[in-house]
Amino acid sequence: MSNDIEETLVLVKPDGVARGLTGEILRRIEAKGYQLVDIRFVQADRSLLAEHYAEHQGKPFYEPLVEFMESGPVVAIRVAGNRVIEGFRSLAGTTDPTTAAPGTIRGDLGRDWGVKVQQNLVHGSDSPESAARELALWFS
Ligand code: IDP
Image 1 (cartoon, rainbow, N blue to C red):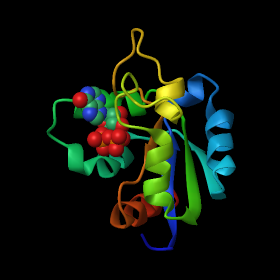
Image 2: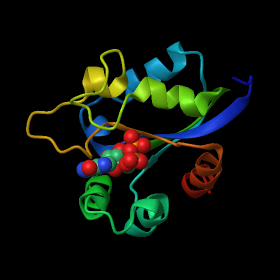
Image 3: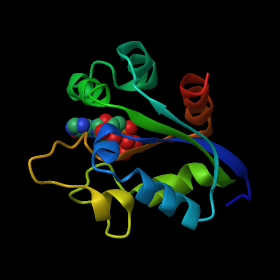
């Protein structure tokens, strides 16, 4: 375990924004000790989402995922901190909110009543390479 200051891209997805959970998600990021470096409200278009989710193109959930992500504004956040890339993914919890651990954003706040798996409130970059690529995309 190294001691590395990193930056990551966090997105509050359209379900998080629509449910008024942006403040609660920012609170959890700050409470953990991470720094909010930049923040913007974005109505993502298809070309941005195609680049962002390039690795998922061709998967069965790709089209519903992109449709969901363009269904409303998202909040893009540049977050800095010690090992923040894996640290934020730990705060977010596993992909499916139904089984995400209590104490995590998805586990505490994610809904599973009439809601699809893609509606899991947040995105966090999964590696330093993804973080650099995604930050350039959303904060160009
Ligand atoms: P992650 O966001 O937990 O890193 P990824 O595997 O990178 O998960 O998938 C990206 C996003 O695609 C997920 O956050 C979720 O919104 C959606 N997704 C992943 N797997 C499924 C699935 O099996 N069904 C529907 N949506 C999915």
